Image (cartoon, rainbow, N blue to C red):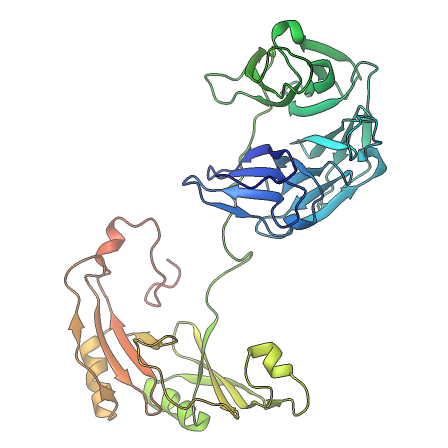
Length: 424
């Protein structure tokens, strides 16, 4: 994946989730392009919502619940992306604000960031200290704790060790050191003589093969040194065990389909047909709705502002999603029904246990029937039998049955929901 970087440094912090998606903080100084991007394993890149509000996205880190924390270097704070939600400012404080002492056209405040054991650790490069922010039970930030040391100058990227120390790239010193928040002590692990050249990012090796290595990236922005490189430093301890969260995709909290809405010309006729012929029940009726002066219905439903909803009735048909019936009047109303091949074409399908008996019943009720019952004998849908009908007002109705299941189920990880086994 590539991004236009404009006048900014471009990609900075990286993080993985449990699905091997890569999350990248990209700083471009352009609200249209900067922010945090998710890159799927096949290379598809998408910007997370709310990214434009982050002034300078720098480092990123997940907690086990899937909240993604992002340091904002210019604004001096931490943003949070809850799973599948837009960015929100989580902790903004002078402790994370830069003071301009680094000599850049903008302050270099909040920089390296790592979540560990209920705490978000963030370093402030220009103020040269570590800020540890506990995460409260409700997800809000607790009282910050500051750790500093006379030699802990210009911290950049960080990683948390299993010993609780914060392993830090001290960029201006071309050094890597470990700061202990519990005692305030500092231990140097590597310096310029070991090939460190303005190192900016750190991460521990993972898994059983390489748990004791600390990897560092040379930013190499100062006087000539070792140059850009990936370094491996013996840390003497393993990195903290990471739990990569599996971030669900789609609408947060989605449980399933609640209803399908259709507009009918005569709602009483439709209610009677669904209840008397199909066997549904109609427990809920409400309306009318209109706005004779404003644009309420236009804004809500993208209909003509003078449209009127005479009535809405919800019907329930056995064990399945509800059907919402609408009766409208509108100046620009199109009274033709779309065919199945037209945009907006649709049908309602009802599962039956005995397709032959159900078709014979519909014939006895005088419902217009199309070709069928048609058995599907090949391909992944083999096992189903279908027959289409037309309701009196023109909507298409399908009866479907697959008592022995369908062929795809033998190898599928996910089985389609069916009213014959709704808990499966």
